[in-house]
Amino acid sequence: MSAKEKLKQYIDKRNLNRSGEPSDSDGAGNGGNRFVIQKHDASNLHYDLRLEVDGVLKSWAVPKGPSTDPSERRLAIRTEDHPTEYANFEGVIPEDEYGGGTLLVWDTGEFKNLRAEKDEPLTMEESLDDGLLEVWLEGEKLQGGYAMKRTRKSQWLLIKMKDDAADARRNPVSTEPDSVLSGRSLADIMQEADKE
Ligand code: MN
Figure (cartoon, rainbow, N blue to C red):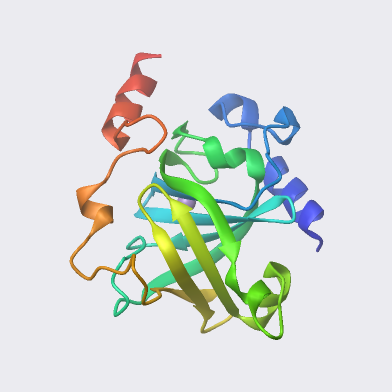
């Protein structure tokens, strides 16, 4: 199935108007190399890591969230591609819908494909097929190199590379829990949804 077909399947699966999520026709995508990490309080709290590749957001669910400690290996489950416009979404998806729960944008910024700069350069798509991504993040909370290694079909490991941004004592998931876009917490967003 092509990326476009997958995207259509995804959009068909959601009732976009009802949950107030952005649709693919908003045209808000900037066409860059954007990354976003959404904190998603669904049946289990997790962090959705999304990398913009060829006009879609390649996505992984990271149960424990990203670490700045190179000795930590965080499980990252590959999930379906999302439309780029989804990168700005914060709000509440009704419980009976796919992905139901509350989301906030925990971190966002630009990323760079480090494998494109190697002697045998690989695009992001090629790196995905190869099962190893190496990206440089320029986020508000996360910076520097991160590797993602596929260990099984949809199972990957997210690992901080050893660089100036590596810090075994920093724990941004717990010390910086709120949205980088709005400053809101998950509870703030839920309360606002209740008042509507
Ligand atoms: Mn999610």
